[in-house]
Length: 227
Image (cartoon, rainbow, N blue to C red; front, top):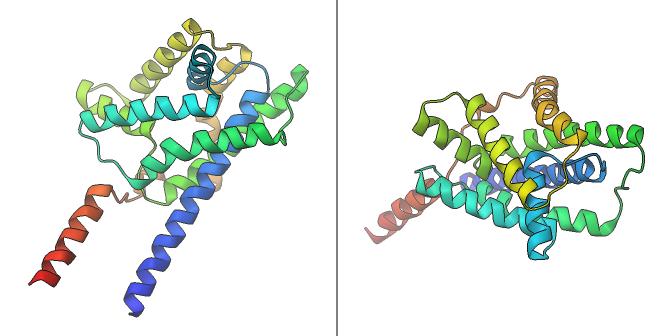
């Protein structure tokens, strides 16, 4: 019984870390949007889709994440519960935060830069939390790894190609581009590096648990009781 309680306590801790991390990520994303200097490449796509379909940017984020996760699955990537949560919760949290109005929209270059840089840092901290939960990577991260394996290209080349593709499609759909887009494209990597180092976090050492692992576990337990 103690073993079962410990297991559920561990799972609860991981889920809490995942949800809090995704919420923090959403705050960071909304900060970069409200900086009003031009969105991150993928958010340009989300905004363009939002404008074309007449939906919220959070809903557009969920749609793009769902399509990306389907691509992950087709390419043979393992999907975690964290991947599914990322797909759904980030978009929902974004809409909630935007609707609340707690994060102001910048009306000047100085406040915009402060909000943008702060948003990138907050987003990086959120990534530390949700990645450390070990419940699966985000849909885009999974797709990047899949394409890296399929093409043999470096992670950086694949990421840049994905970002540029999202940006171009977003521009064609009417997404907003500006100096903030350029800062985000180059600055997020730097922010992640600094924050990960400050938190002494190494994402490559995280052992993720995937949905298939839980399916196999349930199957083994079921077979044990049947015997």
